[in-house]
Image (cartoon, rainbow, N blue to C red):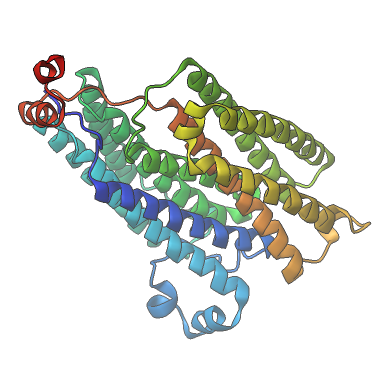
Length: 396
């Protein structure tokens, strides 16, 4: 049988998940600067290696990296993106290794290796055509097929573990989905550059929104790999967990509308973004007051509830400043010049929105997460027996 414990995963995996979240948030910081300062097409060449601007680039491109802010920030975004991909790959393999059924562990890891090999071959095939026009690029079908075969092996192994009751199957599924999400996000960023001449900047908004999905999966892994709460969920905690999930959904909707405003500043998204801010604030105030008033919920929420409170106050202020910077200039928003101060405020407003989304999701998971099942292996039972008081002695 599987062996539940107070910490279902190795401690290093939790620390690694936190590192993944931190570096992903750094990637979001750079991505917001790319959007705010219009650096998305500073370099129309894609895909490129992480060391492209240091080794493979021409002398002109190397000079641009040193001297032009747009070129520098755009390639820094790509480099950190590669770093996130590597970190999440290690995280995924670490999670897959926790499978207690050896055959399922082997199949899952084999599937992940095939996925990465196919994805790497796909990039190399695209890299060989990076100087070609988008309409002339030949889709690497064989490499894509290899990737999907690997995904099939990976998810069959994980779902089989789920069906047979293997402990930690949910965690491994989240890790696999996080790996897939990072791969998809990398392709969205690349296709936004490669397909610019065909579809314009439309993919930029999808790239920005899907970044929040990646952040959400990694925050989920950071919470699930932590030591779970010791107290059982009360009925009130279950109720606040449901409301917290609703709040997280409203925040994600608000982020989607914010991306719509940033990329397509038409009247409809402006109004919806503004109105949803009122809804999110009302739900947040009601939820946090309820959580702080409930001792069990407050204990489970911990520092996350306080962090969420501070982030919401800061976000309201930044939202007003960002709105005035973009729409309070008595001119069309697309004609407002991008200044360092204005770009910084808009970027910070978007980033704090991402932090609110991450905190809302973490709060939901902390409230919703169940207490581990009792230990059931001989060693754990023996250890538990040694630490518990003797009932015979107690009766005497």
